[in-house]
Image 1: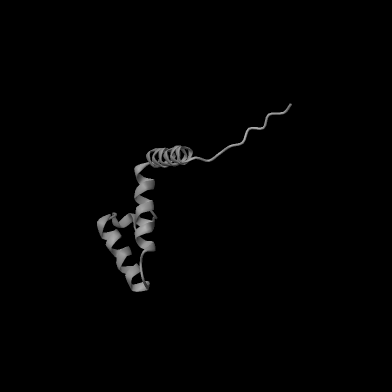
Image 2: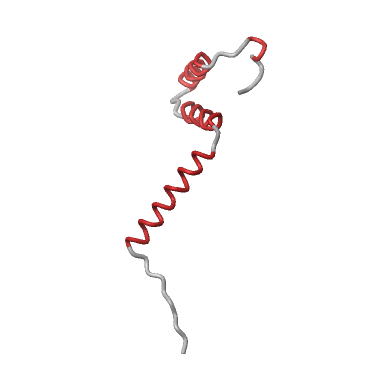
Length: 77
């Protein structure tokens, strides 16, 4: 005689899965370095630009917030 087990999705299983995903997301966030998080924030900020002029304004704003010495002007962050 064979016994078949069926997986039934219940609301409690969905809550456990949701909490597991939240914990994974938090651990991934904390495992990143502060430079990576800052870069991701800047890229997201620039991606919200509505047109070319807005993008250029946001780029200048970020460069003013993080000034670099003149000898580093050609180097990327």
